[in-house]
Image (cartoon, rainbow, N blue to C red; front, side, top):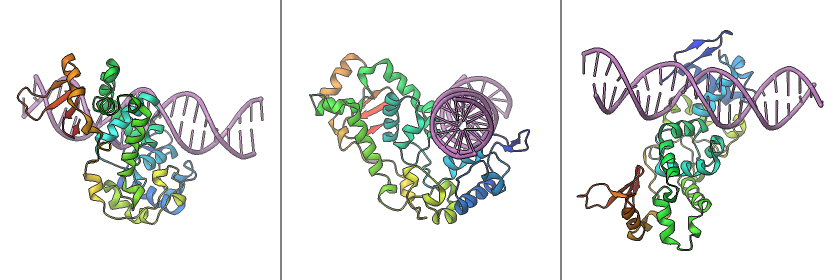
Length: 266
DNA sequence: AACTTGCACAACCGCGAGTGA
DNA sequence: CTCACTCGCGGTTGTGCAAGT
């Protein structure tokens, strides 16, 4: 998964970052900020190029970087954003607090691309559940406006982020080495520019945030999937029950599981 | 058990934009 | 205006791991 550490022709180290290097970078940024990436490694005592330091900081060491699996809402939002924005990962990342462009890009290539392909091959279907919600809830099709849905998804994700409503979580993967530094850092001292990071970091345990899946749905929107929506899809053979004997009425659509009550699972 | 294949993800590379001299 | 420098972005690669054969 990680690259074997090597050195380039200038003697600069490449490959996987060690905990010691991480700590050096964290300590340096905590004390001096990161206004000049090119000079940073020299002053921080790192045998890395500035570019590598910047990447490491932005993607992994920065406070508030969210690790772990993508939620359904995040997946949906990425799919929608990618459809409208294309491969503008950094722009997409601004809609997902705590997620980096690199992480979203990786997730796209490894998991979401196929779903997107399925969507493109049959654009009338959308991603299933959201279209169903819209079409049932609003016969005028106003709610089918992608921007409206996008706003709602973004809103729910933002609302569910403790970042915006209280103390920030510290990524458990780095908290062991960064809590001390992080707890005294804020965006000004770090020169961090994105909004998610522009809030003061407080080193408190937020295990629930990292382990709990998003529980909110789209403001109850999934409840709107009904027979009116599902039946035509069943008739067309696009949507099909998960199992003929499954009395829970689960349906499958391009890898998306739709439970007719109020749950949607990938 | 050995080998192959695919996935996930950390990291690198090249390019373009912005900025200051 | 041009050049050099820096930064940020998107594309791509490399590698460990798990699942499948």
